[in-house]
Length: 482
Image (cartoon, rainbow, N blue to C red; front, top):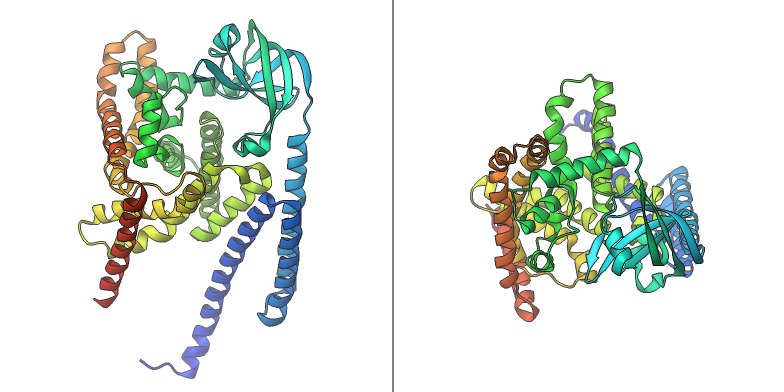
């Protein structure tokens, strides 16, 4: 087929527009990446990054035709990232120490760690990590997030450099608690409503065995505080730990459950209600970094469609990262945030192409492609923190993820209904309703237990991963040659 000069002239604007759109996407990706880098970097490296951005901007303007206004905007945003991150770090290191007796606000759910109760308290706008033993630990074990309690003890500095995971939680110090008062002041109405939902979910699964119930609450609302240590280890070793960390899948499923209601609303009320549901679900799941990323991305996607300007995936991911870290620079220290972003990038960029080259039933090809793509996406963060995961986790995910997805989809509404039924005194009927969900929960646990024992380490694991990548390359070559 030949194109005339007139045909080329007609096609040129569309081609130029498409090129500009793609270039804009990659500029936003570049900006989000640099913003993350300068937020995490030390002061010395920050100045090197700023110098590199300035020099690169001058080169791009002179040699690549980049507009001066865009180059200046990128530089100013990066400078803002530097200022914002330094301010956040200064605030984190500014903590009042010494003895304290008074009111403290409960920030996190109590967690049993050996003989201690671990909890986060907010004292005079500063957050402290608490490990309480004996009577104080027993009393703290029964408190709820948002409640206010009377405590006395000693506020101490915390070596955050050795425990950087605490940075993302905004924890400034350690509180050595001496006494905890019996009086508990109620939480704000929003937090009480959130706690009511969490209590109903747990109550709806009262017919489950204890371990099953803790896994169920982990799957649907990310509450894994009471999971047995053996279960935690099994899910980590099998590559299924992400199932009990609320993420984009949970956000998508909660919107799917609410879609019959949302579809009946007019456009503007639907936008407000959808954003409200997303915000409420973030609070229900205790504002975990992964769910913050997922909810923010879902909100941006919904708004872009609602206003008639759908946004491409890469731009959407980059904008989500950029806005999230602008709002809370300390998210840049969250491993869960990086893993969530990595998994999303892997799914959005790799799942489609992989599904097209994998032979077999379409549903199976899509499932395997999504599993492999997500594993590759989180690989950089996992390697840096946990080491190379077992390649057998791919099979474990293929077997467990579909069932876990069904548990998440139907488990939350059924648990809320069952919880109300239990309140009414019909616990037997609630057990019947929840029985299929319990079967799904038990299946996920069995898969985790089996593949935790099949975990492969060392050279054998490296060989398996190399085999996976070779298989992908061979399938891609075979597909392109057909």
